[in-house]
Structures are given as structure tokens and as C-alpha cells.
Amino acid sequence: MTEYVHVSGALDGVLHFASPASPTDYLDLPIQTLKVGSLGTHKVLGLSKAKRARFLLASTSEVYGDPLVHPQPESYWGNVNPIGPRGVYDEAKRFSEALTMAYQRAHGVDTRIVRIFNTFGPRMRPGDGRVVSNFIVQALRGEPLTVYGDGSQTRSFCFVSDEVEGIYRLFQSEITQPINIGNPAEFRVGELAELVLELTGSTSEIRHLPLPEDDPKTRQPDIALARELLGWEPETSLREGLVRTIEYFRRLQAEKRLGSATVLTG
Ligand code: UDP
Image 1 (cartoon, rainbow, N blue to C red):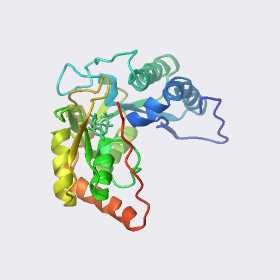
Image 2: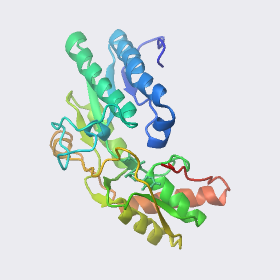
Image 3: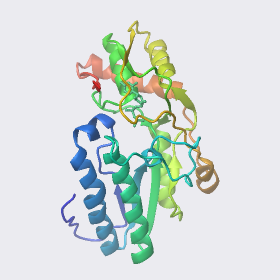
Image 4: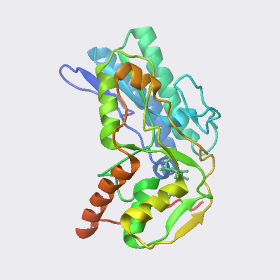
């Protein structure tokens, strides 16, 4: 989609989710990540303009970088290292937001921007590399859970059906400013590892590996705007969501389709 996108016939909406989004993926595909978030966003905005279609950009909490404001409201401009390894994803998404706003202002394209925070649930790839799938796969295989750093860094995990509902409501709304969609319940990565061990009944040990460069120390969405403007808030707790995700990965294991976690080695 970094080339011209041709669609014949009318289009009501364009939802731009194309991009690697797991750190293991975008660290492996730095140039492709930058291209899809710049050239690709340009092409699909052009498509939306030509078709007079509503456009939704899947943006990210990574636009806040390693945040100095906590929790993060949409009005926070962020703390991103443009030349660090994560910059390829963060800056591509920040550029995508800028281009989306420019198409709205200059060409009158009907745009929406959702800032998606950590999301998890059934149908994640076992080798996705993100923390929830890694810990569950490792626990079910009886392998050590790989906690990067001392595990004191925090994330706020949203169950996938809550995330989808929030994005759907935003798409249907008339709100053109960026909106955070995520679950504000915040956990330390070390706590998540303990919870996965408890819920799987696994006896795996915890292994500490180096913290990746520029790994954000905290992350929690301020969802006041989503509550007020969309009447949305998440309903599924981390514990309930994990139970359902573990069930899914157990089924893969029973079908011998579990595969391995993907671990960053430093
Ligand atoms: N993490 C971890 N072990 C893993 C994978 C990730 O400790 O096997 C940590 C990672 O360093 C980060 C957090 O878990 O602090 C969330 O990482 P993830 O890759 O899921 O997404 P991010 O929020 O960093 O984009």
C-alpha cells in the first residue's frame, strides 16, 4: 500500500490499520514501518479524498513516547526519541497524525484518529512478541517468562472486544480530534508475569533480560474524552481477559499449533 491504491466503485470508509505494531516486528522491519506510516498513509488519504470516504487512522500510545505526564491525555505532545530504534514506529505514527490533520484542514477529508493503547486477546499470534502472548505461551510451554528489566515498567492492557467497540464508536461519531482508546487499569510487567503464572497454574520461573532501548517506563491512558464524548469505557478486567486468552492459547496447544514466543535478546 505504499504504491497507488486503486479501488473501483464507491467507498464509505477507509480504516488505516496497516503497519507492523509489535516492537519485535517493527524493530525487524524499520524501513517498511516508516514507509507504510508515511507513503502508505499518503496513498490511503488520497483514496479517501477521491472517494469522499470517512478516514480513520489507527494511531498509538507510542506517540507519547516515554511519557513525562501521567496518565497521558490527548493534549500531551509526548517525549519521543526520533533517532532511537523505536522511533521508526513512533515517528511514522506521528507523521501519519500530522498528514491526517493536514488532509482534514486542506482538503476537508472527514477524518478520525484513534490512539490505541496495549491491547490483547484471543487470536494474537503466539510468536507476536508482545508481553501478554509471550508470557502465556512461555507459561503453557513450561519455559521461563522473560521479564525485560526489573519488571517495574507499567502498561495498561485493554481486552480486544472493548478496544474494537471504542474504535467503532469513534468511527461513527463526529469527533475529529485524536481520542485515546485503552484500559486505564495499570500494572507492572512483573505483576503481569505473576498473574499469568497464577491463572495458568504454571511452575515456570521468571528470567530477567535487558530492558530494550527507549522502552517506556510508564503508560496509562487518560480516557476522560472517550467517556464523555463516546460514552465508552472498557468492561473487561485484565484477569477476565487473560482467562479467555489463556483458553485460546490452550486450544492451540491441544491442536499442536502453539509455536514459540518471540523474545528480544537485547
Ligand atoms: N516485555 C517483557 N517481556 C517480554 C515482552 C515484553 O518484559 O517477553 C515488556 C516490554 O519491555 C515492555 C512491556 O513488556 O515494557 C510491553 O511490551 P510489548 O512488547 O507488549 O509492547 P509495548 O508496550 O512496549 O509497545
